Amino acid sequence: MKALKKEIQSSFDNVLINIIDKDRMVINIDKNGIVSLLSYLKNMGYEHLALISCVDFIEDNEFGLVYIVSAYMENDQEYQKKEKRNIIVKTRISRDKPHCITVINIFENAEPYERELHELFGIYFDGHPRLTPLFLELEYKIPPFRKDFDTRKFVKGFFDKIPLVEERKGKK
Amino acid sequence: MRELELYFGPQHLGMVGNFSITLKVEGDRIVKADANPGYLHRGFEKLMEYRTWMQNFPLVCRINVVEPDHIELIYSMGVEKLASIEVPLRGQFIRSIYCELARVGSHLFGLWAYANMLGFDTAAQWAMYHRDLVLDLFEELTGGRVYHIYIRPGGVRRDFPNGFEDRIIHTLHTIGSKVPDYNATFFENRIFEKRAKGVGKLNREQAKRMGAVGHAIRATGMKYDIRKIEPYAAYDQVEWEVPTREDGDVYARLLTIRDEMIESVHMIFKLIDKMPRKGAVCTKTPNPFKWNIPAGDTYVRCESSRGELGLYLVSDGGDKPYRVHFRTPSYSHGLTILEKALVGESIADVGNIMISLYVVAPEIDR
Image (cartoon, rainbow over all chains, first blue to last red):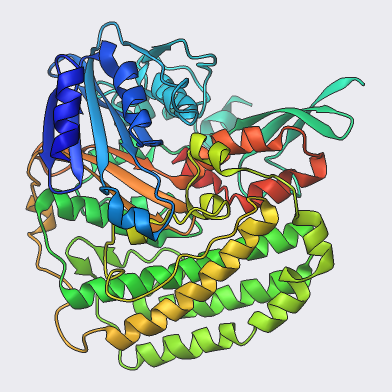
């Protein structure tokens, strides 16, 4: 694991690498380096993209994007040989202009994850072929998973406008 | 031939769950498929940010209706990792036994859905009945049949009742004694073989590229199982095998599921044998209303009956999670692989491929 850390540090600028426990490595990198770092990791054998997630750091006015990659293992020998670890790649993007580059050319299953983050956090992934709605029915002024979207307030404002059955009957 | 658009689901006989696919068809052949989830989107991950760590348990188990136990487990594992809580040994064994029972129950339910869709009603009814026997065990142990809320940070909610191990063994023997009948009527049936062989084929490279996990990738010959790679609970305490197949089609996937069920049953017997007879099942945790968990983030994963299940959990040091994101196996299976695997197949095979991939809609929508 330390060897990989050294290799990454020598090939990329502006990376901050932490090893937590035995099996977790966290790499912090600038958003412009994401594509090259992920394709580098894929060539190193980390072919499985487990998750793309996003955290809304509203106090810093930034979004944190998280990519989690790990290695596929084929048989018992590889369990022994390969180091069993998850690599967590983190980057920060501005909250006012949330743009990032898509990684679907590297990992095919990134497509729905990026669609989801676009819908729920309002992040634009440049180069993504279909950033169309995935789950939601309505359009929201603030994307609903951001921290400044208050679910309870929305529910009150939305459902309280629907008149009660008695009121509707009275109108007839 | 003229190209037509066909809406498959959410109201369709071949569709299990609230999920739909928009198909472009030419005659009977599928040219393009667009998965269309969202019918069950309840925003659990957002709702969890408003509730305390312990209050979230009744929410998380509803993420996967068929198999809530692994979701409870993964959430507990995440909280334990952030709060640095250790689980006592007996608790670990009980967790493993409980999760393997859940796997058997969930596979039987999957078998019901699949056999029912193909018209093998006899095998389907058996599977449903046998799942009910497993649910009886859960009812005795936890009080609930479907949603158990049994696993909690630090261990499990209560110890096994008196003689419960014997009843597990008895139930599993009852189910196991039916395996030859299942084989004769279903798994070795020529009609099933003809329907399933060569359909929805994925080779290993495709499966890897599209993020396949669980039985979908084990059906291509790869022994990818989180229980082996990153053993949690008591999975490293006993010997067991990862069943695989080579062909990567629907037939191989179904046989992998059967082999997995049999392996799980054997594993439960070994776990019961090796389980410490006495000891605590849960570590004491602080008062849930005043429980602040140190700031930090973590990613934990386990093997649910559908494949790798992960959780990315962030805490800001408060009494509620700051961000929760579940990596569910159906997500890649239903949204990436299904769209690709359907192209070129016939309309009659949509349900065939979808259920063999074990796509569960609530898990995608969350």
